[in-house]
Every structure is written in C-alpha cells, then in structure tokens.
Length: 383
Image (cartoon, rainbow, N blue to C red):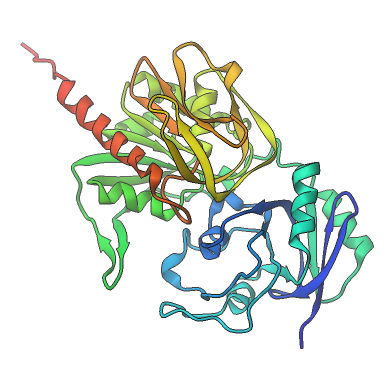
C-alpha cells in the first residue's frame, strides 16, 4: 500500500503525491532537471548536495539502478520529485528498482505530482527552498521546515562533500562487456582538488594517460606543488563558490607556478574568483543534458550537460581573461581562459554523466597543454 507524501515550497505552494522512497522529511533547494536519462548519475552527483531535484521527464525508473552507474560513493541529493514511477523496470544491467534504492539510501522522494506546474513555478519565481514529507503529513510543519532552509547563497558545501585524505585514482572508463579498466600508471601527474568530484571526470583523465592524485578541498598550494604535478584539476562541487576563500587563495598561488590548470563547474567559478572576478546566483540555474553552448572562437555549437546555480560575472573579469564559451540559452559565461598562461575552465560537465560527449575535447586540451609545458620547460644547469 502506497504512503501519501507532500512537497511544500517556501512560498506556500503545496503538491500532494505518493511516497516512493524513505519515510520522513527532507529539506533543500528545489531545482528542475530536464535530462531524459541518467537519473542515477544525477542522484549520486555531489553537486546536488542540499538540493531536491525535480526531473521533468515524466517516466523515471524505467531501467532500474546498478552500482556501475554511480558518480560517487553515495546518493547526494536531498530529495527526488518525479511525475511517474513505472510499475516495472527492465534493463540487462539493472540490479535493483529505483524505489528500493531510494529507501536503502534513506532518500525521501515523491511521485504522482504535476511536475510541469512545479517546473513553471520554479522557472517563473526562481529556485526556492522546499520540504518533502512522506508518511505522516503535516502541511504547516512542512512549510515551516521549508522556510527554515534559507538560500544556497553563502553556503560553503565543498567542505561537506570533499574527501578526508589524499588518495590515488586508478579507474578508467567503462566499456560494454569489460566494465571499468584499471590505470595504475600515467604519463602526466595530475593533482585533482575534490570539491565534490564526479567519478567519470577522474576516469576520463585516467583514460588519457593521467596519473591522478586526489586531494581534499582545503589542501594548500604548497602541499599540491610538493607533489610535483604536471597539471592541476579543479573539480565540480555544490554550493556557493564565494565562501570558499581557502580554495581561491590556493588557486591564486597555484597560478603563480604556471602549471596548467583545468576547472569544471565549481572549479570554473573558483578560477574566476581567483583572477579577481565575481560570481552571482542565477534565478533557477542550469540543470539538464541538452544545453546548447557555443565555442566563441570557432562558432561551433555543442550540446552539453549542466548542473549549476551560480555563474561567473563576465563584466567583473580582468582584461587578461577571455570568455571562450557562452550559453545559447541565456548568454551566460560557460568557459574562460587566461591569455597569459595555461589555465582554462568550463561551466558545464564535459564528462557526460548523463549527457552528450560533444565537449569531451576539453580533456584532450588539458593533456595537450601539459605536454606543451613539459617540452618547453628547460631545466636549469647548475655549474
């Protein structure tokens, strides 16, 4: 027998539905994601920490879940909102149905609501806090809880999701019939900051010949440089970049080393702050796997995967930083590059989990720049 559930937004909007997950309540910023596939990758993306994700595609759970499609070691969303949970799931890789997976991971979730109405509300009013309550329902209490969450602005969440110690990453990309490859050595040593890194980002670096050392978010520039990296990677992650002053300070010092730097998502925003730019909260952000982005140099348009609620303020960037990519949805900055050295970043998620592979070439660019720096560096001869 299905249990009732409600979703209450901070503005007082109420949605009645059915519980498909853990019994209880959860709060977070409610956002909508337009991806048609990849719900498991979305659930396990650390960038969704403290967020309740609404999936606009109506049928979610068709293919079940499996351990190989996780983007982190656990589910990070605060809650899930969908229109319809199919009665059966079918896929040769499936190990469990979605509802069981949500219960096992203690994720409160709601189905059977009008997600079109909810999405229009979030689009028109902007993302706002909400509360899902499943089992025993109390609308007044749910509204109080939703309003207690506040805003994502000012929340430093990278510290909450980062690793607690340095470790080596040795897993390559997944291939049908073979699973994940093992990469225990690489031509280039990359130190990757974990602000909430997705596993497939690390796999794509490993696949391109990178030996990866992952470090916690608060690792100092001195500690990173002591590892003698060929390049430095700044990962994706949740929350507001502005409170992450420890990361901004470290990046500013790392820029002085002239080693190649590549940032994605939160890492992109932190690079923007490190060069003296500013970031700002977006109305409802970009969440989906079908966002058109243009390369300003070639005018080529890519279809990209996106997940962010903050953006780099273009007007605040110094002259030596050029905008390389732009969203064709709202003209927001999607990529920047320093003209004085090898440091660049991209706002979307080029690792395609879920999403298209169009922008994966950025990983090749990073590897190429490490190669260039290696060959142009002439060691000094001590006489």
